[in-house]
Image (cartoon, rainbow, N blue to C red; front, top):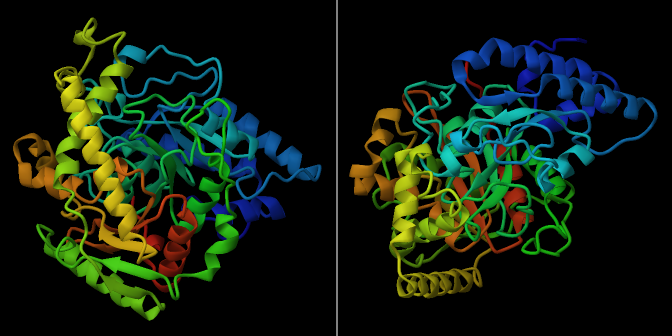
Length: 468
């Protein structure tokens, strides 16, 4: 290792990529350093399900060879990253957090994994997740620990992605978001996460929870890193006819335009009702920063999302019941109570119930579209409760207020398919991260990246790391 690489593991993805490209670092050395750190740290943190050490090193050597022969694949070339264990990886078990699929070995890469490989990224392994990407880990699997404080929640389904990226066990990761699972672990672990527009990223070769609610996106240390990952995984895919055919913008190239002049909507009532003090204070100080950067704030009234939060559960249940039709309820004994409960809820809905949900969802999405006629971005908390503890989250089922506080700023935007970026913006007294969120019109992830990049030029929340 060259000059001071003591904190090599906490460098940003784009920085590592530049150093590999310039020859200051080799992909093989960086990959080995990451594998050593995983071996040393992850026994305690539990973020990986499978470490692909042999394949990662072989890919890293190939990346170095390509560079030495003048073949450059872009900013991710040679950089070690990791993917959530619902992304198919050829020849490597992909269990989606389910004991039922622990022996499933895909014969091909899912589209996101294939695109990452084509971009020269080195895949270190598969990251732990909740059962079937729903709320809880399978009872036989211990959840990953939050590296900032093990007593605090590490986020829902993409918890492994959040923990590994925050703890310096990969330079970026892939998460998925059906009700908040890119945003929860990004918020909980102090990361920048982008939930793209539904259809912006192909879902081919990614295990489904609920097809019209599932979004695949990047989790990283900065808006710039997340933008570089999104640029690679976004775009059309003949294997997924629901993937958008729109061209993918140069997110990284455009981000330095910043947020000056962008119209930013806030609903003071919705942003504060049932929101705890640390979250409110974090949002207020972030607004001052955004104003100083030239953001043009507009007050508005957000369409009441309460019904969307209520409807999300049966809708998710119906769509998940379709996914699991072949194994549920016929193999019910292999399911944990959380996922089984969701499937039972879905199977109990009538066609009439379902149609009412569809119509309410379309109406909400229409109200939201109208809102964006007058603004470019919406600024909101990521969750109403800052960094909940594991013990608090264990009572979620019995506590309607907590469910609302956790889901109110996430699942409405899965229902509408809107893109959002989650950014670290402060810390609790317990020393755990607090986040905020920007939302934009469909397919305007470039504005999210611009706003996130500008905010991170003016703040250093994203540069702080857990002491492990």
